Image 1 (tube, one colour):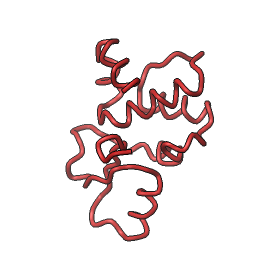
Image 2 (cartoon, one colour):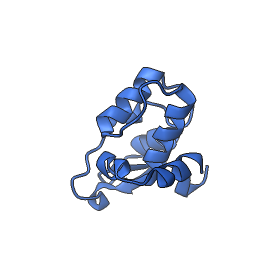
Image 3 (cartoon, helix red, strand yellow):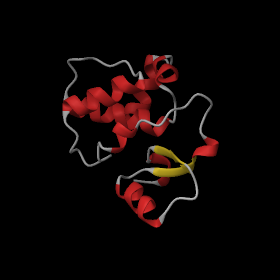
Image 4 (cartoon, one colour):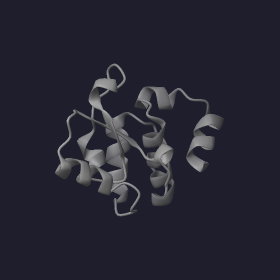
Length: 112
Protein backbone atom coordinates (compact mmCIF):
# COMPACT_ATOMS: atom_id res chain seq x y z
CA UNK A 1 0.00 0.00 0.00
CA UNK A 2 1.50 3.31 -1.05
CA UNK A 3 1.66 6.33 1.23
CA UNK A 4 -1.22 7.99 -0.67
CA UNK A 5 -3.46 4.93 -0.20
CA UNK A 6 -3.11 4.85 3.58
CA UNK A 7 -5.89 6.46 5.60
CA UNK A 8 -4.89 9.70 7.29
CA UNK A 9 -4.66 9.80 11.06
CA UNK A 10 -4.28 13.27 12.59
CA UNK A 11 -2.17 13.02 15.73
CA UNK A 12 -0.95 15.84 18.00
CA UNK A 13 2.81 16.25 17.63
CA UNK A 14 5.35 15.43 18.87
CA UNK A 15 4.48 11.73 18.62
CA UNK A 16 6.28 9.27 20.90
CA UNK A 17 8.17 6.39 19.29
CA UNK A 18 5.72 3.94 20.84
CA UNK A 19 2.64 5.77 19.52
CA UNK A 20 4.22 6.18 16.09
CA UNK A 21 4.95 2.44 15.93
CA UNK A 22 1.36 1.68 16.99
CA UNK A 23 -0.09 3.93 14.27
CA UNK A 24 2.24 2.60 11.60
CA UNK A 25 1.23 -0.94 12.55
CA UNK A 26 -2.40 0.10 11.98
CA UNK A 27 -1.48 1.11 8.44
CA UNK A 28 -2.26 4.82 8.71
CA UNK A 29 -0.45 7.92 7.51
CA UNK A 30 0.38 10.18 10.46
CA UNK A 31 -0.27 13.90 10.00
CA UNK A 32 0.08 16.59 12.66
CA UNK A 33 -3.33 17.40 14.16
CA UNK A 34 -2.54 21.08 13.56
CA UNK A 35 -3.28 20.38 9.86
CA UNK A 36 -6.63 18.65 10.43
CA UNK A 37 -9.55 20.12 8.46
CA UNK A 38 -11.82 22.53 10.32
CA UNK A 39 -14.44 20.67 12.35
CA UNK A 40 -12.61 17.36 12.01
CA UNK A 41 -12.81 14.93 14.94
CA UNK A 42 -10.66 11.88 15.50
CA UNK A 43 -12.63 8.67 15.55
CA UNK A 44 -10.61 6.49 17.91
CA UNK A 45 -12.85 3.51 17.18
CA UNK A 46 -11.55 3.50 13.62
CA UNK A 47 -8.05 2.97 15.02
CA UNK A 48 -9.21 -0.28 16.58
CA UNK A 49 -10.35 -1.67 13.23
CA UNK A 50 -6.83 -2.86 12.44
CA UNK A 51 -6.92 -0.98 9.14
CA UNK A 52 -6.35 -3.09 6.08
CA UNK A 53 -6.07 -6.42 7.86
CA UNK A 54 -9.64 -7.61 7.28
CA UNK A 55 -9.99 -8.43 10.98
CA UNK A 56 -12.76 -5.90 11.65
CA UNK A 57 -16.18 -7.48 12.01
CA UNK A 58 -19.19 -6.35 9.98
CA UNK A 59 -20.64 -4.69 13.07
CA UNK A 60 -17.36 -2.84 13.74
CA UNK A 61 -17.25 -1.61 10.16
CA UNK A 62 -20.87 -0.49 10.34
CA UNK A 63 -20.23 1.26 13.66
CA UNK A 64 -17.17 3.08 12.30
CA UNK A 65 -18.97 4.21 9.15
CA UNK A 66 -22.03 5.32 11.10
CA UNK A 67 -19.89 7.16 13.66
CA UNK A 68 -18.18 9.00 10.80
CA UNK A 69 -21.56 9.90 9.33
CA UNK A 70 -21.06 7.88 6.13
CA UNK A 71 -24.22 6.58 4.47
CA UNK A 72 -24.07 2.89 3.53
CA UNK A 73 -26.35 -0.01 2.65
CA UNK A 74 -27.14 -1.90 5.87
CA UNK A 75 -27.35 -5.11 3.81
CA UNK A 76 -23.85 -4.62 2.33
CA UNK A 77 -21.41 -7.54 2.45
CA UNK A 78 -18.32 -7.36 4.64
CA UNK A 79 -16.03 -7.00 1.61
CA UNK A 80 -18.10 -4.04 0.36
CA UNK A 81 -18.02 -2.40 3.79
CA UNK A 82 -14.24 -2.90 3.96
CA UNK A 83 -13.78 -1.26 0.55
CA UNK A 84 -16.09 1.60 1.50
CA UNK A 85 -14.35 2.15 4.82
CA UNK A 86 -10.89 2.08 3.23
CA UNK A 87 -11.93 4.47 0.45
CA UNK A 88 -13.53 6.84 2.94
CA UNK A 89 -10.43 6.83 5.15
CA UNK A 90 -8.15 7.45 2.15
CA UNK A 91 -10.31 10.35 1.04
CA UNK A 92 -9.69 12.46 4.13
CA UNK A 93 -13.25 13.78 3.78
CA UNK A 94 -15.86 14.16 6.49
CA UNK A 95 -18.87 11.87 6.37
CA UNK A 96 -21.04 14.71 5.05
CA UNK A 97 -18.52 15.54 2.34
CA UNK A 98 -18.32 11.88 1.36
CA UNK A 99 -22.11 11.60 1.21
CA UNK A 100 -22.26 14.66 -1.06
CA UNK A 101 -19.96 13.10 -3.65
CA UNK A 102 -21.59 11.97 -6.89
CA UNK A 103 -22.29 8.23 -6.97
CA UNK A 104 -19.77 7.83 -9.83
CA UNK A 105 -17.06 9.53 -7.76
CA UNK A 106 -17.77 7.30 -4.75
CA UNK A 107 -17.67 4.22 -6.97
CA UNK A 108 -14.37 5.27 -8.55
CA UNK A 109 -12.82 5.92 -5.12
CA UNK A 110 -14.14 2.65 -3.71
CA UNK A 111 -13.01 0.49 -6.61
CA UNK A 112 -9.71 2.27 -7.24
